[in-house]
Length: 460
Ligand code: PMP
Image (cartoon, rainbow, N blue to C red; front, side, top):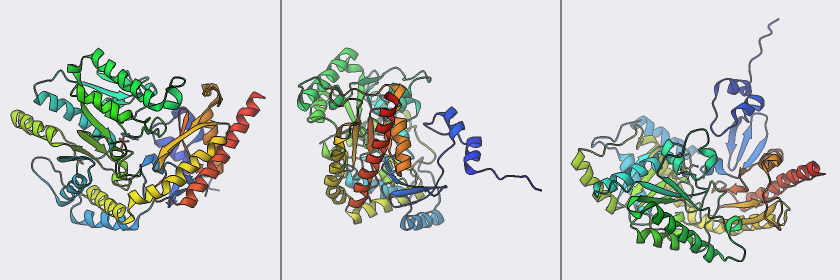
């Protein structure tokens, strides 16, 4: 008798796939959840379990998980010109069309677009361009990059150095020198008793100024910020924050880079997070929603002030010596253009604005749960503060593994929740309906109830 057993996907995965952002030892025990297909805001695994995806994958699948129309566009692009580089004075229609479109919809006047494949690449390139700019102006000593605690800007060596989360630096000998992290902007967790949001924002701006003065303004190149901090748990800024921060940057002639990787393309109820908070960036980085994750693509927009210096510097040294093989990939550009057309047809900004009350109402309705201390959001992005004690706002210790408990019960309930330290972060696909938002609330409550029951059982 043939005893040969065909290994399952789970076994084959464990034997072959190295998973990002995963406990590798635990993975060898548990194996993966293998997702086989998607429909709308739901995905289904190989055991037939269906989950509402409250995070649009990694904040990116704005149009859900299949798209016939965009597939046809990708097919046509691939059968016309599947690839050609845009290095050394070469170009093609899709890269030109997409760059024009991005300049047309940019939140502030921008001059040129650098097309790449990921948010990390775009942020990494932006750091190089910031350095190039200051070199071009004869101030190469302006090198330091300031970001905020709680931010995430990518996983390359430089962008993870920018990322304001020590958990991502441990065991890698990072961050590199010259990447400075200023205070967390979590009002709920970090404000002093009695401090208003405006006062808290002023304290953060004062602290940024003190940091700049300590480092020496003549050594600071740029300040980076994502309008809503994704990695900190989809955390909107406190009132008045960006106005005060931008005033400090202006005072010391420091470049401002908006990381719109999560917030771009309607997520916040405006086309850009920069429009919600009146940001005036010199450079703007976007990805994710740009193609709704249907193909990998990102873009870096720079203003005329930066471009003018770059042209002179590139002429002085011979070229702008920077570039990735797949920059401006024609199929990815064609896909992004079609996605932007779909957003226009859907009137994505009005759609998100009209769903915002239901979404924020859903988050608010969970504040009566013993595990939920606060709820904040804007557009279709927001989060819940998870607390061990509402009165003191105390967090759970690591021994409780509250994230693991909530995640376990979320999967049982049929929802994928993204749990960051202390917060559950939501950024559902922008095609979500009001009924599905209500369902997201019901399933979250089931997950929280399950976790709360476990916490109580463990402490009984
Ligand atoms: N910036 C922000 C704000 C992000 O959230 C991310 C990814 N989550 C990145 C940059 C990096 O993008 P990527 O994973 O495409 O490299």
